[in-house]
Amino acid sequence: MNILQVRNLKVSYGGIQALKGIDIDIAAGELVALIGSNGAGKTTTLKTLAGLLPAAGEIHYQAESLHTCATHQRVRDGLALVPEGRGLFGRMSVLENLQMGAYCRDDPAGIAQDLERVYALFPRLAERHTQLAGTLSGGEQQMVAIGRALMSRPKLLMLDEPSMGLAPMMVEKIFETICNISAQGIAILLVEQNAKLALEVAQRGYVLECGLITLSGQASMLLDSAEVRRAYLGS
Amino acid sequence: MDILLQQIINGLVQGSVYALVALGYTMVYGILGLINFAHGEVVMVGAMVALSITQVLAGYALPPMVVLLISLLVASMVCMALGYGIERIAYRPLRNAPRLAPLITAIGVSIVLQNLAMIIWGRAYHAFPPLLPDSPHIIAGAIINEVQIAIILVAVVMMTGLLLLIHRTRLGRAMRAVAENPAIAALMGVNINAVISITFMLGSALAAVAGIMVAANYGIVHYYMGSILGLKAFTAAVLGGIGNLRGAMLGGVLLGLIESLGAGYIGDLSGGFFGSNYQDVFAFFVLIAVLVLRPSGLLGERVAERA
Ligand SMILES: Nc1ncnc2c1ncn2[C@@H]1O[C@H](COP(=O)(O)OP(=O)(O)OP(=O)(O)O)[C@@H](O)[C@H]1O
Ligand SMILES: [Mg+2]
Image (cartoon, rainbow over all chains, first blue to last red):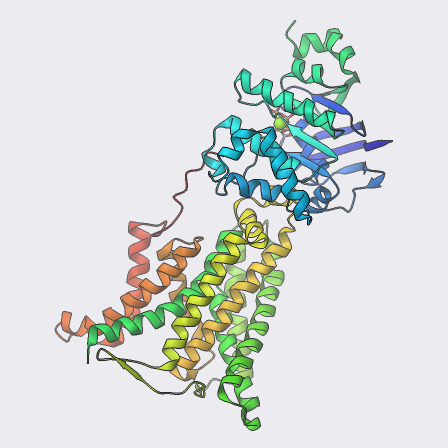
């Protein structure tokens, strides 16, 4: 059964159509990559799925239509987004940011447990839990952003360019974490500029160009396809 | 009698009222980036409702303290409903409109409320009954009465409570989150509209209490009392750094002191040319000075932001 089923999704900004009718399917626990060049509509897709943009078309999540489901209700159902640029609350401490991630929950014991898990995943955050998030380094901020999303106990985690602006070591660490999260059975929709890396960890992938899905399939197949190699892998 | 100490006491009392009202301006500004110019009228409605309650209860021979508590409760509830309504009707439909639009509706709401109050309570000045014993205490040559003591104490308790609410509770965290980034707050599961409504209601409850403080302190209420008070509290919020809670408190108390000391000494300083009736001028000198010299206010935005 698919956890997410998107059909003919269309989104416009004013008169400009950014998504021109796309279909996406994600099975429970699957890691799916969405790649495409700048301005293809990747961020638009994730924002729309999270409920931040009005759209035409069908979005079914856990077999239910999200048509009338407000943004703040979607995270309660386990649909979490780590937004482009991380979107931390810069004036709040690391701990408070993580607590905001658990805002939609009311099981204090489970929240405390998940906080320990996030700290185990990113020990650096435990050390710096009182520091204001706005003063963290880029890599630390990405850890908070991912940790915060995990605090909501997502069933489907959407990540918008988690490697953006990070040093190679840090990128590796973040991708390791993504594989880790995936291994726990959480479905992931991963948007990345770094197509090679994304397709290496993903099971399936979609290629988005100018608001349309132009190619989709097994990640290994996409990695080998001449089109993807030419357009995104530089070879 | 010690004039300096007396002026400081008067300033602290007036400053407590300004601080409570300033908090309402600053909370709404912090969360919506909008100046709720109708807030002063909420203070007036609080005082007027309290007046009506005391009149209704006058026949029941209740202890004054009970009357005071009932007035506080009812006035707060009416003002909370009013604050909620103002946001729903005047601001929410304009959430994405140009910034000038909600400013204009704010002024419109302000005028409507004043006129409604005039229709309901008339144009006359009403005497507000003394609800606390009027037994002045003399401290080091200065006089302070029960009402003034109560005003300062209640203000301190309410401000402490508000700070704890904002900084220590889940709701307060949600309010700060919405203030910082509403879209991201929604992604965390925060119902933005509910948080905005609660913010207006909290500010309005503080305004109701402030209105009753003014009524009790001066013993007089009238339908126009909200405008100048609102303007001064707004000045206090700007002085402290609008959007900053501690700033509103500091700004309120400072403005109260500036006014009081200014009124106390202006006669001496100007060789008798100006009298204490120039008191109101100080607030606006302060507003102009802050806007020119330090537009971000005393405690305005200094947090380093790299996010
Ligand atoms: N708020 C907006 N108003 C108008 N147009 C927008 C807005 N946001 C995005 N767009 C346009 O929609 C298109 C898709 O943008 P989107 O941000 O989804 O691209 P992206 O694939 O995430 O790109 P990148 O890799 O650069 O992040 C672009 O042409 C962009 O200019
Ligand atoms: Mg993007």
